[in-house]
Structure formats: structure tokens, C-alpha cells
Length: 223
Image (cartoon, rainbow, N blue to C red; front, side):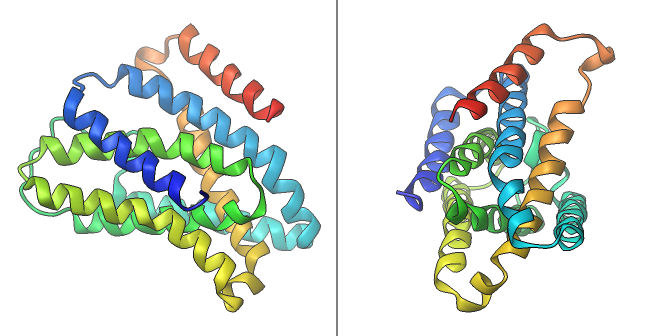
């Protein structure tokens, strides 16, 4: 089930976009705000305590900071697709190789800590759904053939389960599970804080965004 849920989340998101063809980013932005708050809260509640038990404080901090830097580097290629920065009107007829590789590496890293706790998978799933929706919009609005779009989504769906599988089955990776989890924490912290602290247009106060953020934190607390 751990391996199946991320795959289903991505595939169902693609099917949703294919049939509904959403035109507005407003509802996706609210979903991103909820997912950012939910993932951030679960990271604090679940992952950080475990990492600071396994590693020395300075070692944990180094790998968390490395995760933040890694995500900043990946976003140079993905253009921020992990937190909603994909233009819905994009028109291209080439397979987005660089975007695919950066998002795949991101998804691979986020699969590692799933083996460390049952509840963190929900945070990753809630984060993955809006990302998959945005990617699906990007692909289906482009001039790519449907088969290539399905191939891209299918391969992307496999990356997070692959990260979890490698963390369990590979003795080399499992030996550094604490460090890799700290790396994933850095990735999560960067993504979730960017989503949360990006201002609305005109820096206006957005009550709906505040409500979904508080809701995400409260739900994470009671899991």
C-alpha cells in the first residue's frame, strides 16, 4: 500500500485534469497552501524528532541545509513546478526532459522518509496531488502526444515508491537513512515555506488561504 498510494495519487490527478480541463489556478493555489501547511506540520511532528535522535544536532542541521540547497538547485530546472509555478498556457511540442529529471529526483528523495513513519506518507500524498495536477495541466496544454504525456506521468508516479523501495532494500542507502531523511526534511521545509509565504497578488490578506493553512496544521497534529 505504501508503494501504491503515491502512484494512484499521480494517475488519478492526471485523469482528473484530462476530463475536467481546469482553466483557473485559484483552487489549485488553495490546495497548495493546505498541502504546504500539512507537510510542514508533519515534518515538525514526525521527521525532525527522529532525525535529531539518530544524528548529532550539527550533522542533522548540515543535511537539512543541504536539502534546502538541493531543492533550490532543482528549482532552477523545474522552474518551481513543485510549488505551483507552471504556466497553464504553455505550448511546447518537445518532451520536457529537464523538468522531468528535476522533478523525478525530487520525488525520489521524498520517498525515503516514508519508511520512517506511517503518517508522513499522507503529507507527501497531499503535496504530490497539486504537483501532479499542475504537471498534468502543463502536459495536456502542450502539443505533446497523449502517449508521451501518459509516459511522463507514469514514470513520475514511480519515483516516490522507488525512493521508498531503495531505502528499504538497499543496505548502502539504509545505512545513511538518517542523513537522507534530513536531506528530505530540507526539501520539505523549502517547498512548504515557499508555498506558505508566497504572497497573494498585491500582498492582500487572504482569509481562505489562512483557513486552509490552519486546517492543514490542525489535521497534521491529530494524526
